[in-house]
Length: 447
Image 1: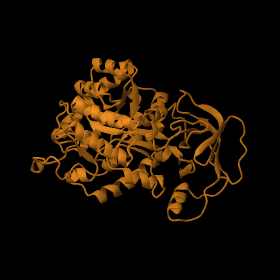
Image 2: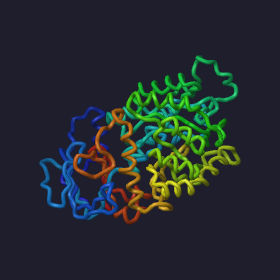
Image 3: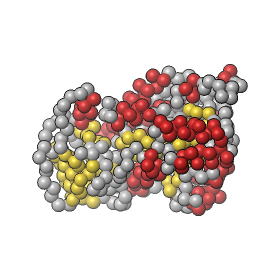
Image 4: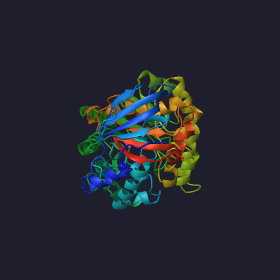
């Protein structure tokens, strides 16, 4: 049984009352007693631990007794597992809940309301951090950071930068020809997409995202599933254009990640200096070897077949989706064979229903990885990828680990997910406490 030393008011309430200007203080500290720890790095869990959180940091981790500070909240874990908050390295907060049709002529206000609701639900699934790789989430991030609304930490890329006809170009034929230097289309004006067709245009679009607070930059280096004019086999940006993006990002001390499925798109991006490949589902062995030799990150997603249901039946988009999904087994096998630095993400698009299965998508990695490997990937490994942002990191400090001095992003799990990864597939039942930045957003009694 979880014993609460003081108060039954949840920290979700704290966040709401803080935003409304109330003065009720949060507990000075939180003490987790008698917990098993999965620390995000070691393959096994250790038992009989006590963890003290003060402010937004883990102050002490000990197998010995920790005296409860005055005014602290005490949670007796009863031997349950305390682990780091989960990290989704490929998320699109603006595009999770809208349907595919509405995104082509978006209502910006409505998109932001949907994204705000989804941010709350993302956090309540135990994902305390996301790397958003395409979408105008700067306002949402600010509202979350200021505790106006609950949600995960967001590492924003800002607009997904594409070329004319590339992945991310949702324009219709009536929008053509494009007037060079003319008024941006509605989709561009929302800040969710930017079109750039020369190295100079790429530099401008990259710098615009950095100006708004992007922690990393996202380009689409090859064809994609959801964009109507973008065959999977095409390679979009030239190497010179990609180099312009890399140079602009590196001038700000950060990096470029690119959407790329095919060997040609992946290899061209790496040659231009890109640090992280998103997807890579159709890569071949030569490409995997090249990635390993250049120490390139692979941010790949275990796409469930249901994701294709976001697209109309018999559509070209659905056909492309199934082609990509079919390539994943080979891509994961190559990632394991060549020991690629591999991050976990979901890339849920246009499906509020599928987003509720975020934890199930993580658990589905059991096709290729053990439970400890999966948990490590979604915590400390993903945090290592986030650290590539350098001084553009909006949350400088240790994420994805349970150790002294790290951010207090924690989940108390009813069971041991390092032994049974299926526990993360049902966060509503199995995640008893969810803490982000030292604030408890979920606190329930075990059944």
